[in-house]
Image (cartoon, rainbow, N blue to C red; front, side, top):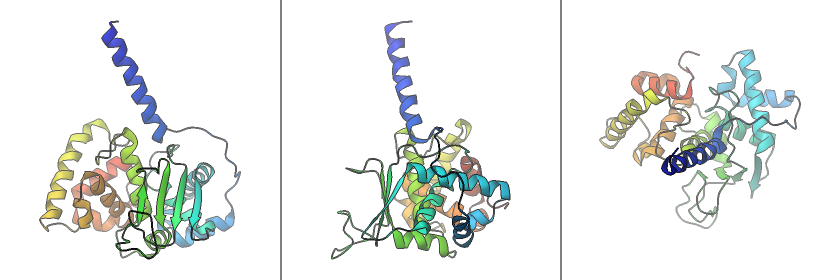
Length: 263
């Protein structure tokens, strides 16, 4: 093996290792042995995705919740945090990865719940343009996600909206798993679908900008935001997405390995 080949192989192994740090499964003993029945009642009341699952799928969803809560701290900033808050954060994390049993977000250490929307300086009071509902990563935020607590709760009870701040930010994490936030989650997309997905994504962004789409205009900001926005739509209102954008729905169905329209 030549020196060039050795260097290439070493770089390849480093990239694989870095990639695995984000989403590859890692077995770890859980701190909570059983899923509390009180938590189950909260999921039944708040999380429609959970209610549409079979009994065995609900058990797997609960296991994902426990795994997440054992590995990620959830901290209130100016807010108290209770079991419902923790479960809604965890549900937001489990939903996008539900088609990939055993996977979890290994790059995430803590989720901060803010009392309201915030600005770029992370201020929630006495500040103008407090229009940020969620954020993940960024300068000084390695391993940290911020969510507006009221917006997180609204995402679960407002079934008339396609927006879901929790799913939005966790999909950003999936998108960044390959090292680039570009709307192409290589951890999820099978190779044959990459080019069709890119073409469809660019066409849909063009349609949004030209006012020919029902997708949230924020999705036309860039490819990364498009992927998170349409993922919210896919999980929040799958029937509407399937009717209005059937090709996009079918592609997301392949990416997430979930058929929500068929539930």
